[in-house]
Length: 106
Image (cartoon, rainbow, N blue to C red):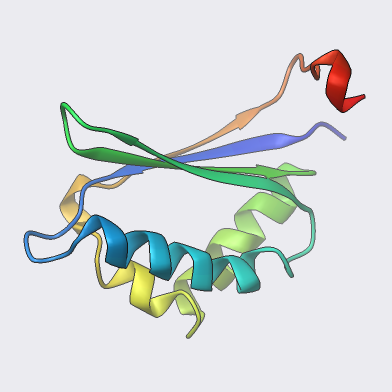
């Protein structure tokens, strides 16, 4: 079984702030980290295009897809979803084919 990376790119709704997004993402993390197969998550921002990228590592494609369904119906994740422009969302699941950690993390 190979790990899977979930990549979600999106923009905020016009009235949403970066601070609101970060707080809502932190709140949603309590739920995400409890899901089967969760390994790691990060949130990044590309200033020029004002695009956010939420990256989540899962232990399998099945767990990644199940988590996506649970995420969408979770009350803990609703505040995060309310800040995102749904028309801007691009989501991918990719299978990890090679990975390595820096020596200091081994």
